[in-house]
Length: 198
View 1 (cartoon, rainbow, N blue to C red):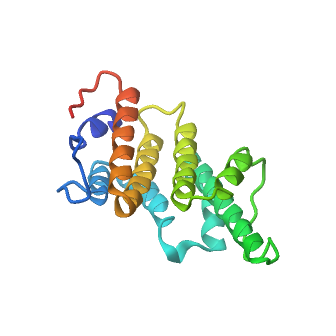
View 2: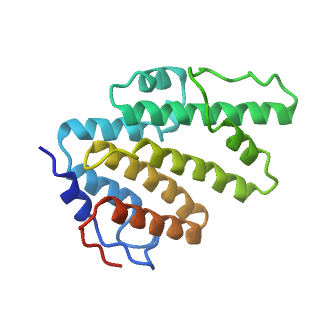
């Protein structure tokens, strides 16, 4: 049986001056998580990471993910697809094209974050818009794991947030560091009694 609490507690100590130039990177943290997981869990982690590869932005990939047995992966990619489709519709509208052009797959059910997403997309500042989109994704990840404790879904959520942080470290190191501190605080709140040091 996997000891997820021990795995999280064993992650490298994250200091306030942690940066992309540190010996500890987003990719190395993900690799460390994978090394501590079972083969079965690594299959799930790889499925999640496949969603960050350009070659997988297609209908077949999303169809597979939306039918996935793992609830986190299924719901994460449902939300991801809804956000991507909304961005495509927004861009089509700005270009005067048919808003449904290049939408390759629709999702079923209510998109509760639609209004908030539209508010972000129609913002004037590009950086604020990107931050807003990642904030929506971050909050969705937290929502998906709100009742999850010491299981693979917690680690999948952690990795998903690491990927957001990694993007901001390459775009804006200050923002990336702040997101990392936020993730550490969230983990502290989840794993009561685990000693973390900054």
